[in-house]
Image: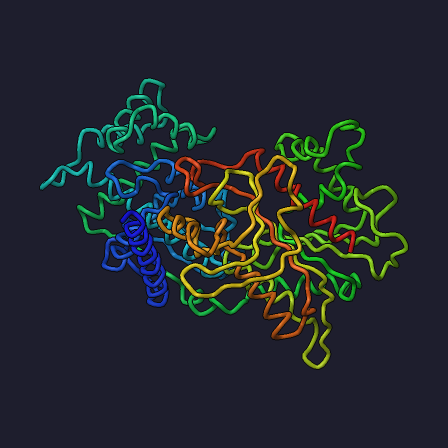
Length: 560
């Protein structure tokens, strides 16, 4: 009986996700919607039925605090004050007097047009839109909770708690006593304890704006209250240019052309190229840090060096490693195409003596020495757009120059379904959530490569999800316990593999037997309460798995 109930809940959750995406697509095609209109209510109800793990107590009366932190780190500062939110393509705002607002945990340019309007630039495809709309729906749900709590029934008056909060927010500076009293009123409004409110207050506080949390709660409530009492409704719009351009690989094509121009200029198109999708530090540090920092760390092991380099305090150490890398064949291409994907190119023919921490086989001529191409993380469907364009030949149809791509390695963070933060997942296939699409492949990496390092390693299938913010336990349990042998979830695997397979097997623009490597480390376990993405980052826990995976990839490249 229990199994049937679980399956039913998983099916209900799957239906809710499907409804969310169909509704979002419909709204995008329509060009606008109001959060409290019929379509907005449909999004809200589907999200409440789904109850994603990341949004915790979204369906309860009390406010969801961890979810609020998670969402506001991914949306532009000040969005809670904006009644009108406009999603646009890259339409030239960067050339205006407006300064871009970039959320701390999502690389997207946002512009505050005036007191009431925020424009958010979408340059990374549909996944970006799904991400934003889901987060906005969460904010609207939370703001309605506040309004329902503070509007006195059958009147246009608000409760004493709200009036006291309003007074505190309008003061230029608060004493400690005034701040604590304001937070006591906020605790009543949000249905949370004073202790919980104090913790969140501290997480939001900045030196310039110590009362940021009070202002966020006030503005979330104020817009919902005004909507209820005056009928002045909030609205989300999608620009005509965005609706026209979406799905046309405009940014991915510009990005790929720029990179191929640089490779051509450097004479590297015909050299063996190894693509690695990773962060912008682990490959460079793995190649050069131990030798570059011998004076600073004469007896330290590699892990201690990498942990020191990951600390925000050690800018000088990072600068020294970067300088050594640049002297020994590294070329950095900062993105200016809107993809937000920076690139590093390492030419192994330009290595000076004892600069690199890895050795190539002896007597390899320069023209056969590898070129390591590192690209920053793509976001969701953007992975297909960028790799698909990159693997196309350079030049004209009449005179195409095919790139000599030897291998493609994907390293990333993912949610794990068994194990904990920092543990490893080595996939043998990617399946696409909500479809019957599946992509089996031969992975050059295997679990055996990572044994004996104190981390758990899981081998099996990965699910590529449409958005991490929509996962709930029922669906994940079903995947984990089914015959799919699912070990984790992430957002890009299917999109990378689809581009690789179409380039190698259909278009024949790269080798058919191209080597692929996929390895992920766990950023969270969505099946464990308190271990979701909303529970906070990895901190130094991510250093060991990141460099372990990077090391295995580089050893295979150097031993080719």
